[in-house]
Amino acid sequence: MGIYTVPMPENEPVRSYEPGSADREAIEKAISTLKDQQIDIPLFINGREVRTDKKIEIRSPHNHDLVLGYYHQAGEKEIRESIDSALEAQAGWSTMPWEHRASIFLKAADLLAGPYRYIVNAATMLAHSKNVFQAEIDAVCELVDFWRFNAAYM
Image 1 (cartoon, helix red, strand yellow):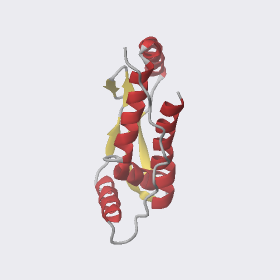
Image 2: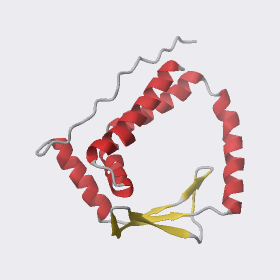
Image 3: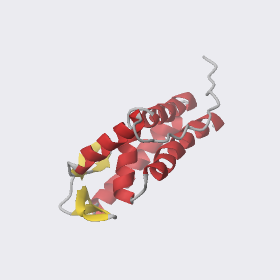
């Protein structure tokens, strides 16, 4: 048996993305990458990718000519499968030791604050018409803080 503690986090620092900075270069690259591809977003049910016959187009709100990709819309069958899968997963999650559950959220926070920061910000900018500051505080910093602080408060 061990004694586990979750470190008390500090708010995720908000980056400035000033011209000429490495952050600006990285966000511009991420935006360019997302603009140059159309993503196909499946449903995820019980760990498997599910594609349906009903694909819905995703367009950028500030540039209707920019098709970002498509998502697969669930029907009654997929909704039922998803609910059943979630109910099955709940049993395992609820009996998992708290420190294991906390570590999952802390790992997710580290990934979002690190290697996924620019792609999430770029996706938020393109799909929600946010500027880089709005994306940074809304999509990255707030969610990183949510995961870290809630793990600490648990």
